[in-house]
Length: 150
Image (cartoon, rainbow, N blue to C red; front, side, top):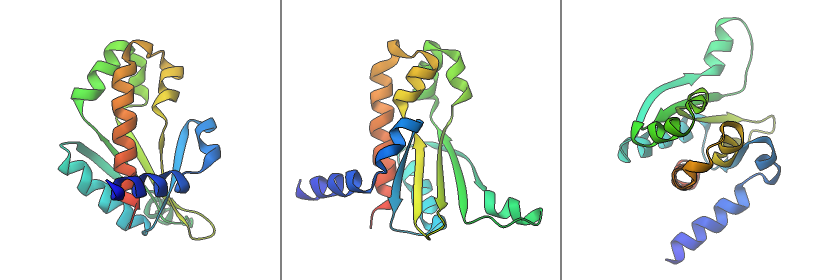
């Protein structure tokens, strides 16, 4: 129980406070971009989620002669969760499956960023799906903790 409280305190401390206004949350990672993405992929698979694709944006930039700090996008989901949301509003399919952007800032700090489920509610009118959104919010927090914490 004490470990859970400590993890939640660390999580809350590591969340960028201004990010909720933008519709996404930034969580500091204690690992490299690759290791954070690897850890995320592992926990997602353990939880029965489908990892659809992992995109290395820095590698893509390099192919066209551009430099980009390490940046990976992990796209994942589960039809058991996404389908009920789409039954509330099919336009939420624009924002599904879920995504996590793992990136390194100019100071070398690695961040784990994801959409705030409440933002999806505002954008797509998902009030009838508030219980599903709460589950999604909890799951995303847990995935962020598992991927970013020591």
